[in-house]
Length: 433
Image 1 (cartoon, one colour):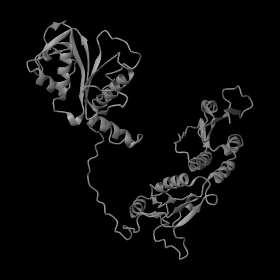
Image 2 (image 1 turned 90 degrees about the vertical axis):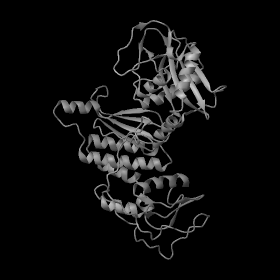
Image 3 (image 1 turned 135 degrees about the horizontal axis):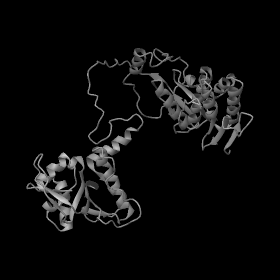
């Protein structure tokens, strides 16, 4: 199947003409009704561009049924839903592409929404019957058509939305299910009926008939230790609801997987794992703008951690292009311990410094144009902080340049942790730039 466009209005060249675009994907096709120009014209004439409620409801039925059908066919991706009246987008299986085009044509030109409901009826799956209470075997080719593992995965997702535990197992040619409702989900849905409209408890109190099929035992638990248990009681208290984590991320972003925060927090606390393709001969590595790209990418990855932690606008290491020398000798010091990079210092050489005695609200001294190494950023993994790692990195910078620690320049503004480190290394004062 190739991409194609069907025009609904007589003049296909008119920008106000409504069009239906077909875009095939690997597992399904996207049918997109373009009403953009048509809706703008209606709005300019004082008419409401919104779709009628009956139209939206019919489209919603088709959208939900077709997405379920695609997931049922072992597609594990997500879909983007758009409520803009200028665009009506439906993702459907390939076998229903032509029918979808005709139903959208009838709905748009003839205001006939019955075809949309008929298409939704053909696409809808008997999920309620599959999740009905009772132990039973669903046979491939009789009750479902996809593979048993894909079907079981689909049923688990639908059962989770209903608050039902599936108790399912896939075999070579069938899927055994025994849907049950936990006391928690029963209490939750009965306590908040507005949040779960139309929910009906079909599982509590269900008794298996005497001639019910018996699932073959293949090992595992032989007892149900929660049968007849008393539901847990809950109390309303004022729990802390802060959403910020010390690593710089939110404890939970609704649009991100929990794994995103977990991975970042692990790197922030323990350091970044050393890539297997890098040969690390000593504990401290000096990366420059001319180093191999794998080393420069590692420096960029590590610099992302203090960027998030301190809410910086830019990454302190941006040399990811072709190797090139910089006039100020930009470099990064990476300290390794326990097969992780636990320390990072970004530096370059510069002139025009001022002395500072580190006293609060004291004035800076006179300008000095001596070439000195300048610290741009120092970061240490959380577990290794207050153990001298930052001081080790600053001393390495001074030794590498051939100067004393007190001659190193610090970029401003200096964070509180940076001030504590500077006072410990050079209590008589530092250079700033």
